[in-house]
Amino acid sequence: MKKLLTFVLALALVLSVASASAVTLKLSEVHAEGYPTALADYEFARLVEERTEGRVKIDVYTGGQLYGEETGAIEALQMGDLAFSRVSASPVSSYVPAMNAIQMPYIYKNAEHMWAVLDGEIGQNMLAEVQASGSGLVGLCWYDAGARSYYTTKEVKSVADMKGLKIRMQNNAMMVDMTNVLGGTGVTGIGPNEVYSAISQGTIDGAENNWPTYQNMGDYEAAKFYCLDEHTRVPEILLASEAVLSELDEKDVEIIKQCAKDTQAYEIQKWAEKEASSEEIVRAAGATIIELTPEAYAEFQAAMTTPSDVLGGVSLYEKYGKDYQDIIDAITAVGENY
Ligand code: BDP
Image 1 (cartoon, rainbow, N blue to C red):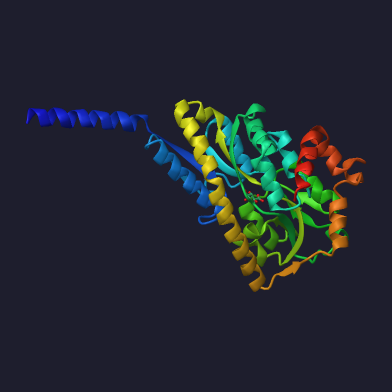
Image 2: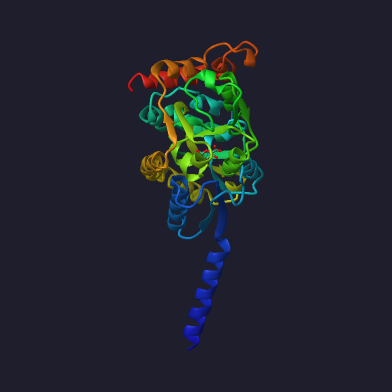
C-alpha cells in the first residue's frame, strides 16, 4: 500500500513537472476554417505537439478572430504578444524590405518557376533574411497562394479601363503603386474580411486576389468582373515571433522549424484542389471572367517597367527593385528553365 502511494505521488510529480513545462502558443490566420492555409496551420500544430511530445501546443485562431489585418498580427509577433501567424508575404515587406524582390509584378512565368525560386537558394535566403534583417520575426516556410488578379464592379479589359477605379490593396506600398501606375487608386486599411462589404457599400470599386480568396470571401458576389491579368504571385509565409521562440528550449525551436517545412507540400496540394474548385464555383455563379488579349496583357506588364509620372518619373521596377537587382536577376535566370 505504501509502495503504491509512493508510486502515485511520484507519478503526480512527474506529470505536474511535465505540464508545468508545457506551453500553449497562439497562431493567427485571416482565412476561414477549411481554407488551404488554415488546414496547413492545423497540420503544423499537430506535428509540433506530436514531435515535442506535448511540450509545445499551438492553438490556431482562424477567420481573423485575433487580428483582422495581417499588419496587426505582424506587429504582435514583433512585440512577443503572439507566437505565430500565417500571412501573405506582401505586408511583410514593410518590415523586411527585401521581401518585395520575390513578389515583383510579372516576375514569375508560372507556379513552377516560383517554386523553383522559393525552394532554392533565393527563397531560402529570403526566409533567413526575415530574421537577419532585425525585424523580430522568424520566417518558417512558404505556402502557395497562386496568382493575383483584379476584380471589379466594372469590366476591365485593358489598362485604360483601370482609370479612376478605387482598388483595395494589401498593406504594401509597392502594391499600392502598382495599381496607381495602371491608372487606378490603390486603397489600404481594409482587411481581407472587409472587402466584400466595402465593395457592396461602394467605398471601393474592387480588389485583387487569387481564385480561392475571391471565392471564399464571397467577393465574387459583389465584384462580378474578374480580369485575369495575373499581376503577381505572392506566396504565403508562416512567421514566428523571435521573442517567443527565444523563450523556448532550442531543441523545440528546431523541431518547430522542421514541422513548418514539413507542412509546405501539404498546403501546396490543398491549394491546387481549392484553386480548381473555387474557379468552378465562381464560373458557375455567372461571374464574368476576362481573359486578356496578348496585347492587353503585354500592356499591363509593360506598365511595371515604364517610367511613370505617378512615381515621379521612374518605373515601379526602378523604385522598388533597384536595391535588389541581384535577386531580381537571379529570379529571372531561374525562369530560363520554365
Ligand atoms: C490572400 C492571402 C491573405 C491576405 C489576403 C489579402 O491568403 O493572407 O491577407 O490575400 O489580400 O490571398 O489581404
